[in-house]
Length: 263
Image (tube, rainbow, N blue to C red; front, top):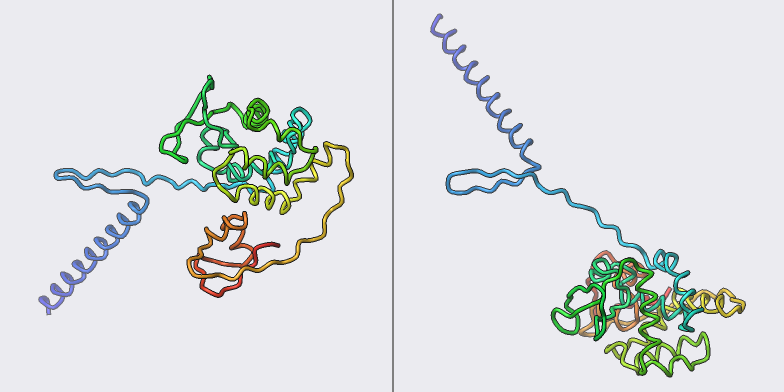
């Protein structure tokens, strides 16, 4: 009988040690869940896993609200339609979210060009490592954009256009070589009309502005070779805008699918 109790005692003690060992391993695993472990030949280096910062992307409406006043101020000084300035800023800077804009406050993709004496940053654009202007704050970018257009001969004829005619301005910028994208005018006009940016032109010109009727819905049928990105470029919308309009949860589309491209 004594041997029986001894054996039972040994087994119970062993079981207790086993539970403690498992708990220790589990606790150790839990403690290391927020760490990165790098194993070398003779050492184990433990570093804290970096926290992932959440990034906030400003919407286009917020961009318009933030920069409409400086755009109208520049229109008063230089006669460049505020709608054009805002549309260019939205397009060129991705509503202030492009990497170039974040690094340089450059909202219009203006390159250094000969004679630029300010700070600069190098960024891949049409060519690798191109030089772009850097500004202390975004308002300086808007002011320099106006001076850039007003002091170059190739844009001179734009200032003879009837004030507030954003359609001719959009086409004139393209004809003067502001951008290489042949759909640049269409994209600017689409942005202006989607967000009613021409109302700011009318405010500057002292004209009444009537709220336009809601846009009619237009659909696009997906054809072979289409992607959400190519469709977004075709209609001057962002991929996220198309996904939002069509309640899409991924970038996958299929041939023959009908997509809403205006709201």
